[in-house]
Structures are given as structure tokens and as C-alpha cells.
Image 1 (cartoon, one colour):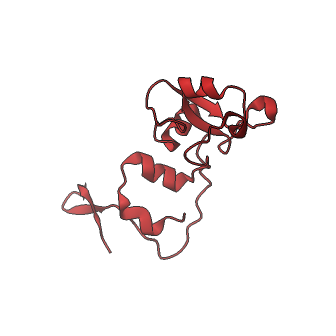
Image 2: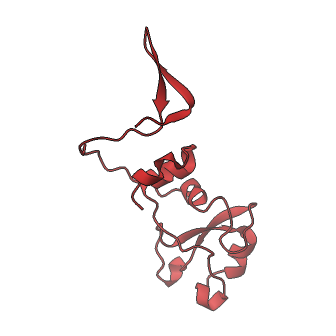
Image 3: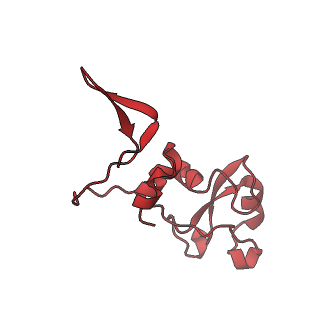
Length: 131
């Protein structure tokens, strides 16, 4: 099954072939583990560059959902994108104390889904990716 990738082609000396957007293997090939690094920019990408409290797209920073001073970790599951205003408003409080809850529960993205969501691959990959 060949699904062309946006008109791109592979060229040899004598032929041109439509570049597939998906290559399905008939047997499993073990690949090394590739995780998504925990970085400020990757948290922003995961959260669509949007404050998880008010939806703003400007003056973004990171917020620990459970503050470090209250035992919160510096991890995918405890960091969200927040605008400076919401981060200051929440302060050193838990979501319950501040009555401010992120619109989406923080999660650790898989490498394949992160790559798909942030690299321009279309929905061609959906049926092959494990969620």
C-alpha cells in the first residue's frame, strides 16, 4: 500500500517514485528507545503554546501544578504552560487552594505522537500509532 507524501518523490538515476508517507514493516524491527526530552520548549509544544489556565498565547512560562515547595516534582506530569499573569495569580498554591485547574491534565508524550504532532506529518500515521 503506497500513500504519496504531499507530492514528494524519491529519485534514482533512471526512475522517480512517489515518496511514501508511511512504510509498514512485515516483521518487527527493534529500534532504540527514543523519548521526548523534558525541556521548556517541549512543554510549550505539548500544550500548543497556550496557557493551560486562561488560553493566552503571550508571555508564556512554566508552572508547577503542585509547587516544588509542597512536594511537586519537575516532571512531565507536574509542569504546564502558563502565562505570567496566571502563574503569578496561582503563586505557591496547589490547584485546589488557588481554585485554578489546568484545562488539560499534564502527560508525558510518546516520541511517535510528539513527532507527528510537531513535524507536519498528517493523519496518515494515525492508524499505525499506538495511543
